[in-house]
Image 1 (tube, each protein chain N blue to C red):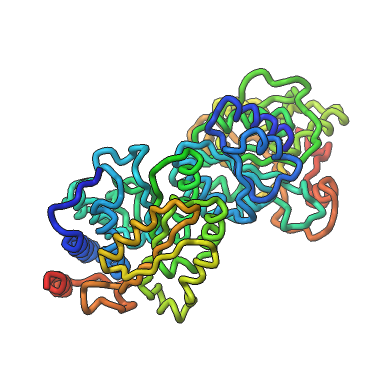
Image 2 (image 1 turned 180 degrees about the vertical axis):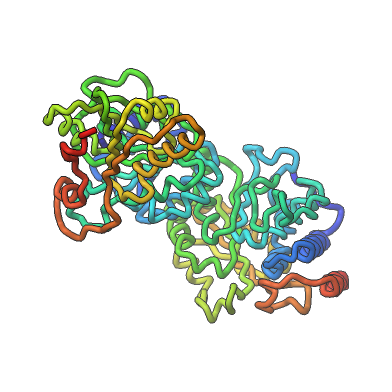
Length: 272
Length: 305
């Protein structure tokens, strides 16, 4: 069982963010904004919500967490390292030559269920895992985290249409709704609104929250345990680049890596 | 072939409780017996092949041996990236079954002509590609696929193909096996999939001194069996219901070239490839009509050594 840190989940989220910044700076990598936007969700999930043992990552009874927005893997790697799935020092290998820490989530990394880099893939797989859970009368749950822009992909909507038909109430979808995708604002590319009612009309239970408020994230995840034959979706309203003022809501930080000065400023920002 | 497949799959599922069948709303009058016998291991996921391939990957992650079933290009080309990334990259135990290989659904048009998938699937690591030559091979390949722990593609014809192998093949098929169907001296026809009946009839009817080999596997082909054939025959004709580019004949050429490079053979035999010449056919017609139109036919002169 994953143990809660002695620190608060908010402090855990801050640690995740700092590790994310260090990684993308060192590797000169993209996608820092989307990793920062989901850091609070990951912190709550890995701070006691998910039933996963770092020493027994394939335990049959574990909860399955599938990150679909694989480009934001720095957040997941940081959370796993901070929870002792592997040494924190390994994060220095992120995106390095010969490293297993690819800059899209790799299932070669301990604790990672699925590789993800091409968008719209992990949700249908999560649906299959949830279907297996149902057929086996298992008690574990499946959580899949997707980006908002990723919901442009039709494969997701095939899975969203399918899941209520099979009464997959063991499936929780979390949307990191940070409102920015690769080339623009979501509302300007393909508007997802009315978002909540879309899912409701697909027969999902919908919880819309502030994706940076740990109490709200926790409460929504608790509500998702209800066995009512309906899959659950948490629309987590987030801010791309959250926690670093000059990165927040900026498309630029979907791509750019912070230089040494920017890294220093960013970490100061987080510590204040 | 599809009848042989589903009957054998039922036999496999009786002794292996991990066998799971997903269909994409196709398989009327084929899959019903499986669905009735194993309702807990059957599901119609609807007309959504990308989702089906993803679900198959998820079920396989949880230990199932998952078959996904549809017709033509739908379970392959339609969800090619899910096959590559979700199934093959994670090396999951998913079997893809397409009914209507080649021009089997001739008059339904190019949407239903499955004539490019070998080439696409051959390039993907971990993928095994099978195409039975008759219903007996279809049964053996179904057993093989169920036992093989990894991704596998099975291209079936449709219903009612005649038996080519005169008696039951008593040995189980192993990965890459080649089956000898007729014995000749200097020339051999390498056939894959449902062309086999045509080839054996042609050789018999014309009383040709030629060997015929059926290749139930397009990838991989066991080089232990293939190497002696390159040494034995002066002329080899490959035939397939697929585009010439990237298909079975291409695979044979590549194996020959590798063996030449590795000094396993001194020269490559003369190889004639019979395959579709980079064309779509918009003409309505039966399977045989379209095969003729596409030049998937033998000529007695081809056998001159």
